Image (spheres, rainbow, N blue to C red):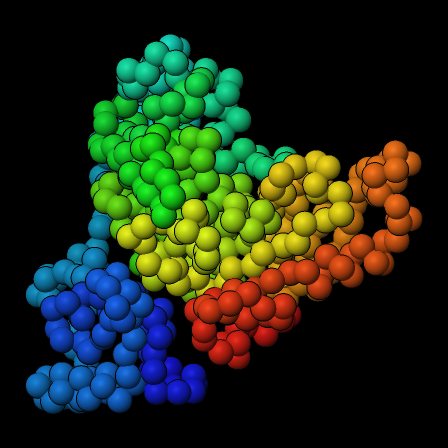
Length: 466
């Protein structure tokens, strides 16, 4: 087991699973059915913790019962690979020598049959799609229809619009990227592609349903995103729009998780949801502002990917970066104004939450500037702001190592100065230094001007910069 981390308390499923040397699902199964001593803070969905000494005693008790000094509990991986112990190993023999002995004609027939079977398998693979009216048609590589699905939405976006959001996220730096709304992905691990399809309508109404289809267009499940939300001062309509979907194995257990970003039409609450391959809502996080971009990345080298989100926070009227641990994701963004605090939602347990300052020209461009796009580097990230077109460079420790005001920023600054709306001459060093000093980190209690984790854990748990 990993004894390298200091302290007796393990603060998350991630740390508990690392200490035990297994995946998160296995730990959760052991906690539920085998008495693994894991405790929760606050509500049912609160943060979990465990003591190393409690786990050590639990292991010792299990080992004593096994009588051989070892912990013998199946992990999720072992369960998937389990087979009868007495099943003899059988060597599969190739049929080709037998077929060859029967003559050239039989060899030809066998080859033809193998070719046809391979062709059938390939012809069943979804590769592309077409949309006409309310109907989605799934096609193979030869553009042959595999099946249809009728969304029954008369104002469904057309095929050309959906192609901007198909399979691969399209970067539009510095603007927000085209997040995915349709993708072919094996989400259940059976080597067959499912079709993930987000309803996307011309008037942006009726756009809150996520569909999972098989390659023939049969609906496997659907899920309405969002739910009625209220704050201290208003009630929001339950009209959610899916902004983007992503699929990845976030916890390293071999099964995909589906991440969905949805917001109330024309309003600020945004739901970030994790959905299981079977269509169950597993976890959610709420941000008081729209999300523009998101990516998955194992930034701390523990073998499990975090969720990185960029967008804006409406209360502070600033762009933001949010880092979430999928295994503990819940709650809502840090807000003080009752107008933006969601009723019935506890404070979030983000790993990091950063706010980025408004520039001198933002008030001439937009009410609320956004961190619109995220680009991964080997040793960090680029964050792009819109509309001011400022680029922030962060390392893997979430330190901002550089700020760059773009040439378009300088041009607009000088134009505003020529019009008498800005008086000071453009000074790149002054502008960039002020922006860097204006970045704020949430430390779980308040906003501070230095690097801090939102979950209150010590910074020495961060990865070292490359």
